[in-house]
Length: 435
Image 1 (cartoon, rainbow, N blue to C red):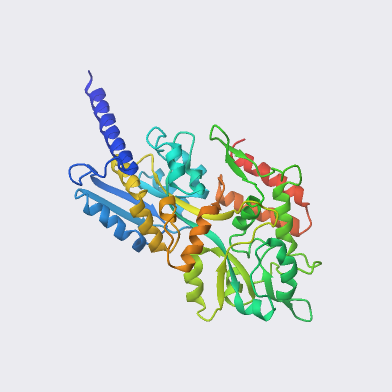
Image 2: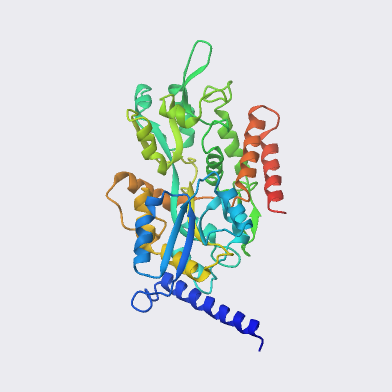
C-alpha cells in the first residue's frame, strides 16, 4: 500500500476517534478518559463577540482538566466579525470554533463542519435546547450547539406613563391606539417633543428589522425557514389563515405611527435615534434587548424605567418574541478539528452554558437550566422570554437590512403600497437564496 494512502487512513481514524469521544462527552455517556484526560491536545482558537471575562473562568476550568490543551479566545467586534472571519479564512488564519449568531447561519453553512445526527439525534437536541435553537438543525447535521439567547423586551418610562395617567404598560399592540395620543407631546407647530413609540421609520429605530420580524412572526410568519428536507424556503408572504398576508398586516401597523394624518403620529426621520430618545426621556417605550438593561442604567442613572414583555396581537393564541441566539460552531478548515469538536461538546454542557448565561446576565438556552427558577426578578422575566424566543434564517443580514429599510421608506413616502413592497422583499429573499 502506498505511504500516502496509509497516512490518510491513519488521519481518518484519528479524527474519527476524537469525534466519537467529543460527541460522547457532550451526550454525557462518559465525562472523560484516563481520569480526566480526554485526549484533547494542542491549541483551539475560539472567536466570539462576548467579553473575554464572560468565558475566561469556564474556559480555564476546561483547560485545568486537560493539561495538554490550550484555549485561546479572541473577542471580535460584532460589526466587523463577518468581514474578519471571511478574510481570515481566505488567508488561512481562521479560528477553530466561532460563536455563530442566528443571522449568519445560512451565510456560513458551507464553512461549518456539522455534527451528524447519528451522533446527536434531532430528538435529543430538541429536548435539550430551546425552540429557537432548532435554527441550527441543518440538512447534514447540527451546525452549532446553542450557547445563549438575548430576547427582545420593552423598556418603558414610568414617569411618562404616570404623567399621562396610564398605570401599566400595554399588553397588546392595539392598546397603543389608545395610549399613544396621551403620551405624545407636540409644540405649537406640531413638531414632536415627546414620542410614545418609535415605529414608522427605519434608520433611526434601533433593531427595526428585528422589530418588524417580530411583528410578522407573532402573526405566524416564519419569513425564511426550512422545508421537510431542511432546505431554506421563503415564507414571508404567507397569509393569516385565509385572510391577509401577515407581512402586510405587520408592516401596515408599524408604519402607522409615522403618518402625520393619524392621531398616533409619534415618530419621524428627523428625531434622535430610539435608544438616545429613550435615555433622554423623550420616548415612552423602547424596544431593545435584555442585554441592554445594565447599559441603560449606566448611561442615565436617573432614568425611572422598567422592563416588560413585548406586546402581542390580541387575537394571537401563541406568545412569540424575537431573540438573538448564539451557538458554538466548528469551522470546517480547523487545523485541530478533533480537539475543536471536543471543546464544542464541553461548551454545550450545562456547566458552561449556565456559567456563560450568569456572566452575561442572560437566560440559558438549555431546558434543564431554565427549569430552575432564578431568585432575581429580572432574570425570571428573561427566562420566560427565552422559551418563546424565535428568529428566522437570514440569508445575508446586510442585504436584508437594506431590503427592509427600503420597504419601510417606500411605504412611508407613499411610493408603493404595502402589498407591493412586501412582494419586492420576497423576491429579494429568493434572489439571496439563489431561488
